[in-house]
Image 1 (cartoon, protein in one colour):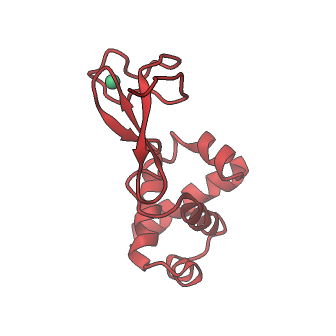
Image 2 (cartoon, helix red, strand yellow):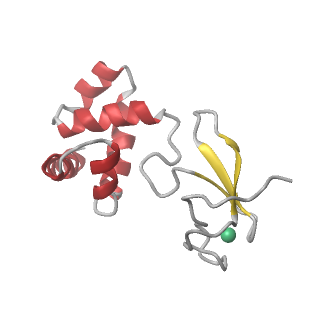
Image 3 (cartoon, rainbow, N blue to C red):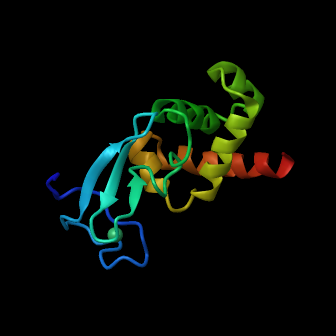
Length: 137
Ligand SMILES: [Zn+2]
């Protein structure tokens, strides 16, 4: 039996009694995804989830580093096709990342600033750019 420790992750299940409560010992590490993302399990509701749940990294088969690279190119206002070429990813992949980024834009400003080391202005410009591109696409 694995020991439950205090982790900086919370249960994402809204019906769980420990939903969104930090500092409890209800979350255990539960293996890793193929792309290296840590998975967790809530011992109260038995739900498993990825570390990246509710972030732009969730459900993407790309490595975090690759997504960061794509986001940095978006922030520099490179076109989707140019980014696909530079990063050697499919155009649809770039569109998918941009899509998730756009969906998360308000909620994850802080996250992008700390994790991607973008300035608030860069982040603002990235959202504006992504939204504009989405209208055209
Ligand atoms: Zn739970």
